[in-house]
Image (cartoon, rainbow, N blue to C red; front, top):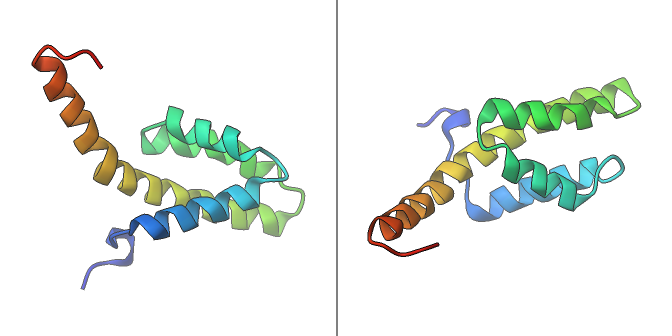
Length: 103
């Protein structure tokens, strides 16, 4: 049996997680800002650094703690999904470029 942190995340679970995070951050940041933040920070450390300020803007200590957990979870899911979906796409684009196609 796989460890929980190595669990394969389905596409639906990933989007559900992203929706949950977007909803949690809604009072602090718009969903578009969050999406752009996630797109612009592809490494785990960069992503965590980018999301943590949103968590610390929360007023209540309990909310801050919960949001920090959500950030950690989001980082794991996004990194996993990125490796699963973005990497093959990037490799395909690279192959096309090597054959003279402009992307």
